Length: 270
Image (cartoon, rainbow, N blue to C red; front, side, top):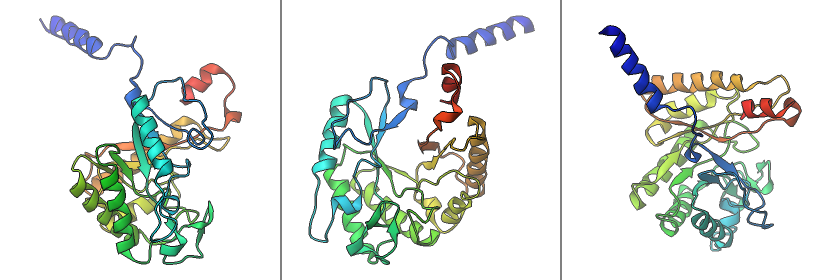
């Protein structure tokens, strides 16, 4: 009888997890940097989410001056996403010079896109609410900042970032409870990732739905297995802060092509 039960269990497992079907496209997202400004062809591979970082869509581009708004590019992205049946992940970080606490803290993108937090929290709240209301039901995933553990993108404190995330969370959930807030996406390098725990302990833990991180396999000595250490560290932080149920999303990554010797190895990296 015991053998029969074990055999039935194995059959059930095989049927639940067939090995002859591809991984669904819901597990995959892409960056497409030139599809909006240069009409780059749409990819032929199936995917489900499109992260808008590096497309030119960010706060300084959307609101270049306090009383000036430019929705042309983001409207184009939303329309294209609807046509292609993909979901958008928007990152709403970086501060325009006019709104920055430290306007001379230029980011990796130059001096007009500062790495500073905003000087007046109300400017941030107006910006977030404007986007939330304009794209209600069209954009569901909101990532608050890109790689704040690097001074190229953020020169403030984890506590200041927690304040920004809190205000964004409250506004986005008020406008549409279906909105999902992704944490400021850290680089994923073990040397930098403690920033995430500092952010959580500063109050950020109460105002995110998803952990965002970047699993780069960048240096020539790197292998894909190195991201396991990053995942384990994030899980440890999640447990410490009572957040172990939150999913972990890899919202950006890359692989040095020098590491890829043949097609089979390339598939392994992916």
